[in-house]
Image 1: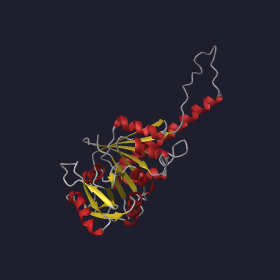
Image 2: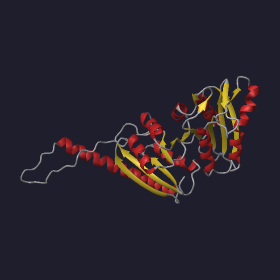
Image 3: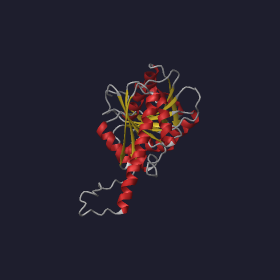
Image 4: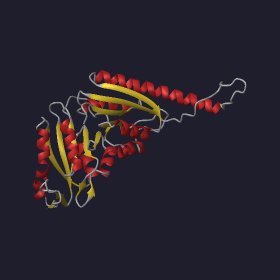
Length: 315
């Protein structure tokens, strides 16, 4: 990560986009942040008008083209005003941040992905629901999934906190002994969390689970039978080092085990426990070569009641 954490925020002026800005206060972000607010007007900008260049033989511009230009210009002005408003709100809440903004006419998903390719942020933040300036939806549905799949870095799909009390933050992490889940744990480890923050590492097991007993020899695999819960202590020990690592930063960290489908168990446990956010790796493995945090990360981000951060390794 660079000296300043780079944060790309997709903002569309909706209530959910405002909730995403509010959620940033609960994301454990550092004081040194370079934030860039991006508002996308989903409109087509026609070629420039050339009316009035030659008064002798003036070019005829159809009224439909004129209206299209006027409409696109109006939407871009609205987008610029929204981006500026988000910029001002971020500076009010995080006065130490370096915040910039921009507005452009583009397909929202690809504009976000292209900006991420160029600027290489450490984290992309989008609201769980939203709309483009033109109409339709900016974040939810195929656009959010496209950003989630195509963006080169980590993506946080933000939701409003269910309760606005002063209770400690609760973070649920999907773990499976893969590189992907280890990256998610590391992301939490590097953040700055308020005192009393609780972290639960959730491992969803099936009948068997593969592990690497010796990290120096990743080719050596061991299989643990998890059908019998007497073996769960052995599974729990796999994840204890990660919990201990988080505890060194003052976090209240513990391991949880559940049996079932990860897509369901992660979402259900987060809701029943009252998690404020879920962290998952972009991909991982569970059981006999089955994806845990590939398709699971997309399913969890779409179905969870709270914010979901899908973590990718830093480039």
